[in-house]
Length: 279
Ligand SMILES: C[S@@+](CC[C@H](N)C(=O)[O-])C[C@H]1O[C@@H](n2cnc3c(N)ncnc32)[C@H](O)[C@@H]1O
Image 1 (tube, rainbow, N blue to C red):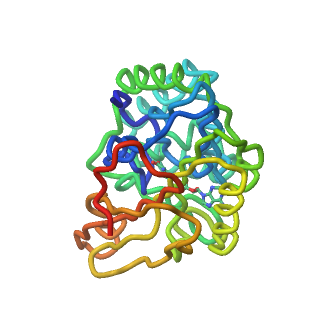
Image 2 (cartoon, rainbow, N blue to C red):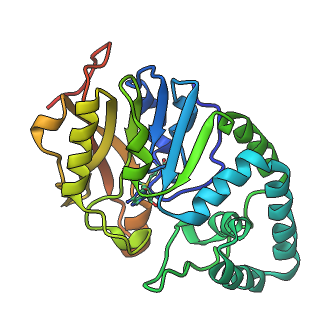
């Protein structure tokens, strides 16, 4: 059972369906999560060692700071938060400018906690460009401090890599388990300008099959009347089922619609108990 409140709020997070997904997790030697984002699946890893990666450097810096310097993370947040309560929205924009110059991970945590709808958004230059969420003061520093320390304990068994997913997965061995939550096809600008090439990703799934590692992939799916049809080739996976992941914050922000997101889950193994809603 996951008792970890989010420490890094991440748009596209699997937080609301984490327990549902974790039911099909299997024990492994090493747990890999190469698209870690806000890390909602990490507390469910059934391994004594984990490897987590992401392409965004400030995100990995932040994960490492939470792991190694929880006290500093909490106090850096507190000082920014107190400044914001005293001096208002200007503080947010000064911190955003500073972040865009330095990529300071403490600025990054503060921004994710105080920006509009918690959306991590970069412009074409790669600068963080979301605005201040006027009606939200940001999480209370004492509450955040407790959460940071709780996560710091969990993260001790994790190694973090700021790398492309293929580099992160280069050490996978038979008996390891990989949870894959890549960006949706066609939404590359949401995180970064880096293009996510599906053919390369499918090759990597194939490589993991050859090694004899087990993987779960959340991918594709539909939001309202749009279908993200980027299903992997049928011969790379063994099972496919759908879960409801709730409403899309992104759609809400962009066109004020409340799309219901359905997401496909693919497994390259047969889970122990099968109460799956298969196609
Ligand atoms: C859908 S999010 C993961 C959300 C995460 N499961 C959670 O619950 O918070 C996808 C992540 O993949 C990262 N990403 C995008 N392209 C990548 C790549 N080529 N290699 C590694 N990470 C990548 C993004 O920065 C983003 O954090």
